[in-house]
Length: 45
Image 1 (cartoon, rainbow, N blue to C red):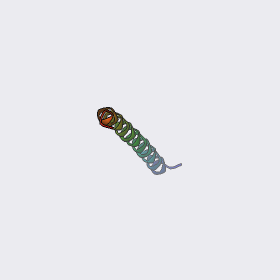
Image 2 (image 1 turned 30 degrees about the horizontal axis):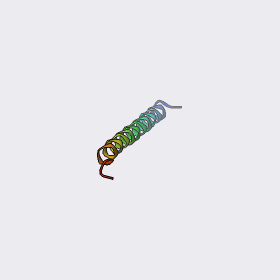
Image 3 (image 1 turned 90 degrees about the horizontal axis):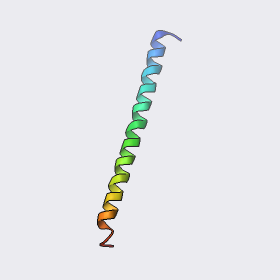
Image 4 (image 1 turned 180 degrees about the horizontal axis):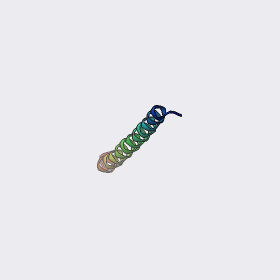
């Protein structure tokens, strides 16, 4: 594998990790927000 190909592979790997991390954070935040909203609106239902 050439040095250029390795850099492209390394960049793609980092990009994939970042995307997975962002998805995990977004899902965790939305899940926590939904739980908080359910707790606050639970009495009204």
